[in-house]
Length: 209
Image (cartoon, rainbow, N blue to C red):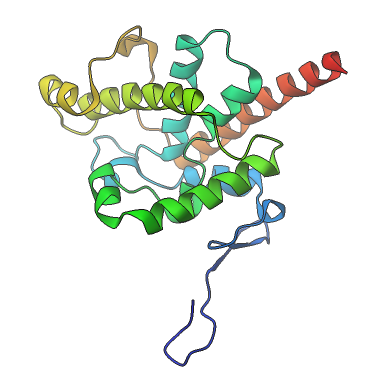
C-alpha cells in the first residue's frame, strides 16, 4: 500500500500493550489477549443502535456465542470453545461491520479478516481456521445470539428477526444475559472466560502427554 507520494503507507495499529500489528500481514507475535479483550469491549454491535445505558459490545456478544455454542455442543473440546469465543477476534482492530455492508465491501474485507483470524489462532496454539463443520456450528450459535440481540436490544420484531436469523432452537431468552455491560466489565469477563478455557486446555494437554 502506498500514499500519494508513492511511499509505503501505514497499515499497522499501535496497541496499548505496545505491540504494533500490521493489518495486512499480521504476525501472531504481535497479538495479545489483553489487546483483544480491550478492543472488543469497546466495539459496539449493531453500529451502536441498541437500547440501554451502554453499547452492546462484541466482547459481550462473543461470551454469549461461546455460551450458546457450549450448550448446543456439550462434547466440544476446549480448543473448539476457544475458537467460538474468538470467532469475532479480528474485530478488535477492524471493528464490527453489519452483514449487509460486509456483502457490499466484498473480498478485501474478508481477506484482511481471514489473515487476522489466522494470526490470532496461531498466537494461542489453535488451528489457523476452524473446520467447515466447526465454522457452521459457531455460525449457528452466532445467529441465535443475533436473534436475541435483535429482539431484545435492536428494535426487531420477532417475525423480522426470524426472517433474518432463523428461529432459535434449544436456547431460550432466559438463558442469556442481554443487558449491555460497561466496557470494563465486559473486558474483564472476556479475559476471565479466555483464561478459564486456557486452563482446561493446559490440563488436557498435560493428561495427553
